Length: 273
Image 1: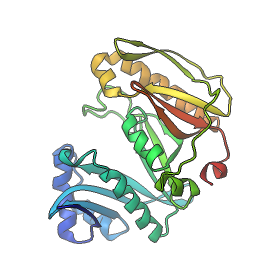
Image 2: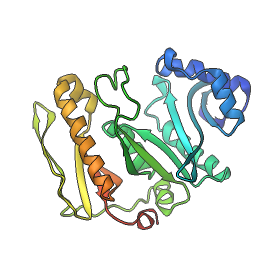
Image 3: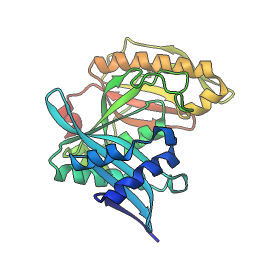
């Protein structure tokens, strides 16, 4: 049968989330049912993906409040392995956007690791999110395979649900940034197919900058952990510096081994219009 997406409102549906989280990640890290049920009663938004009657994916959010501004905090999105890479995550995010609008939210926020570039492409290229905030070592030490041994640096994605930018991304009519003469703030070289960082620059002030990172960071970690550590430390320094100077991450370009974050110094209104 076709996969169906719907809002989860019944207790029995909410109860399924704890088991599904355990299957997707680690049973020890699953959010207890009593917490998800409480959140669902008091403003939490839970979306589920079903194959027939089987829950195979979910997305949940809760209201947040930052600097006097309310927004919807998107916390977890996950699918069973057999259902990944089918575009279901994108579909569920657009459903989340429509639900957020109906509830009166103008912005949805969430975090992701800037070196996990598949997530970056989803969040920025496909959905039209932007990044103005870098959170160094956001979660402290985590002992899972993706994070073990490195700072848990994160981007804070802002998704302005009523903006022209997001509307264009939804219809796949996003405006491309002019990258002609945009300098790269990282120098690197490929050795045995692994990008190795050689130098960084913190002195650029052009309107558009490019920040290259490895396209497959987990492969870099497996090949040479110290190379991965240097990428983590350098990108943390670079994003901290340039976002503090008013740059906004607005796009991504890709080739086989390198992903380039596009950073623009423009007024927010211009970026979102």
